[in-house]
Length: 371
Image (cartoon, rainbow, N blue to C red; front, side, top):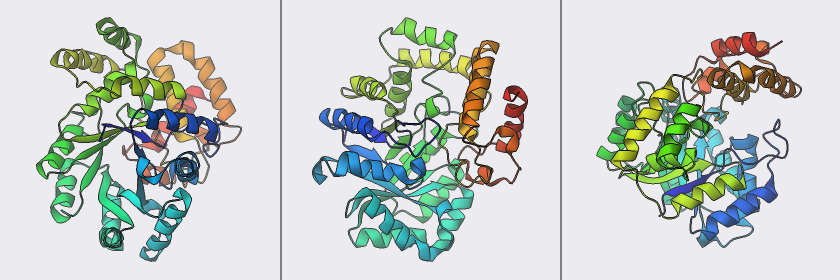
């Protein structure tokens, strides 16, 4: 399998303030380019784009290409379930939205201490094994947002899990919180191939501070900033595929240009990355990846990752961005709750894969950006 997959989390939108307004026609063009270049791996989940991601996949891929031309990964999302009896219906709904009669790769979604405990209590591991025995899914695994010790526990207890999906990028590789390298090493030790998510850290490694970008461009003027991050994530030996959540045809074209004939990061390039990483780490105020898990369930309908992105732009690029950030916040607030509307219920923090103190960060954003 080629080491590049199409993550269907950040699809192009017709209305940037409405994550459900997926631009299907643009998605079709992106899918055509992806498959024409010899790639075949797609990844989605029921919660992506408020349920529209799976439908977009059906419309752009399933209805237009033979089943043998693609593979699809979908997930059993524990935070969308309230009781074990809901799991069969949840899976059946996914098959219907996808328009397929089997799923190639099926993950337990976003396991961390809380969701892992829930998965065990619900019998989720046993449930997905039954799906595999029935031929309704072909391969089992889980996406993971815990530490290396928890990953060791899960893989030791559940050797039937074939693949692990990890957040892995050059910024998080040695991060004490995310523990990308340590988790990768645990998976490798257990003989489990790794699927990479967040190789560009929600876009943070595509738009980096000017001094860091200058370093990369000086070494290779023709390489995009994002390409350094994706190639870094694809370089370790035990990587099966690297996912990229693309929002435009241009992003797709760029990724295909260097992943079609993938070249691992060299030792010399790694030294450049290390230098750029030091610069980037000094400028990130809120380490949000814009996965949007926090938005689902927010009683105030606050566009949390969008506001965090605006705040990070101001902190990264300086006061010159303040006016634009405040204007964009105002536009977002026409259809969403403002940062100051937070009632500190904490639902968002229970769903954040990065374990961010979202409520406190929203206070910071409100003070900085709300007029």
